[in-house]
Amino acid sequence: MIDDQALDHMRRPTVTRPLLGLTILAVEDSLYACDALRLLCLHSGARLRRADCLKSARRHLQVYRPSVVIVDLGLPDGSGADLIAEVSDTLPRVSVILGTSGDSFAEDVAYAAGADGFLAKPIANLGVFQNAILQHLPKDQQPCGLRPVRSDPIHPDPVAFREDMAHIAEILSGPVDSNTIDYVTLFLRGVARTAEDDKLEDAASDLALALSNGSVLSGQIARVSGLVQARLEDAVAM
Image (cartoon, rainbow, N blue to C red; front, side, top):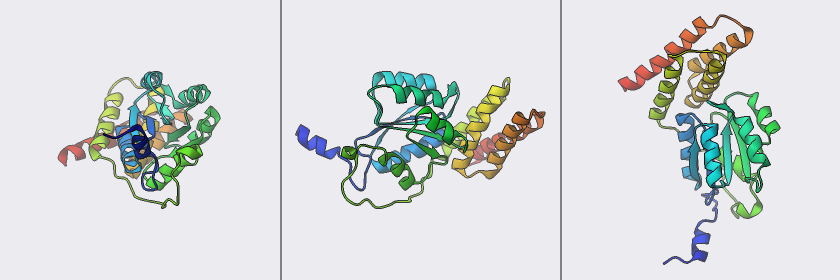
């Protein structure tokens, strides 16, 4: 039988699993991006829990206190910046709060809300992910000794990508207003960057630009919808 001291030792971070013992709450609506985080946590020793919206995240936080919270800035029921501000002001404070997004402007928004750091999508590099967390952890939660810098690439499950495409296809099949377009473009740019899908990212960016310029959106929406549908059909063919 393992005693408490031995169990505590087993949970201490090591140079090969530097996030061992940490619980990470990912507030992320993209299944594809979350699968990337799952793999990063698996290789790092951390336990991952997921919330897909602000409401779900708040329920999680009422039940337990994670070691790290990673918050996507564009969520279906509001801005992740609001949650970052709430978590940052709650005592005892979570050790590490990180914002994430596929848009460069979101970094300033995350820091202004109280985030400790920012992870630009795609989050696909093991070393970048680990360092973003470790540099903000208390010393007693960090591994001892020299730690090799790893650049292992992460390849999320393509089934999760298809689920994300189905999610957006369903949204675009219904009534679409400016808030819907904001959400769709943020979501697609993050997923497209993770999947290295330049055509989809460009189409989403062009739609966002058309919205900000007050242009007619029907053509851009049709373009995005067509690309999303094509990716769904490709996945079915596979």
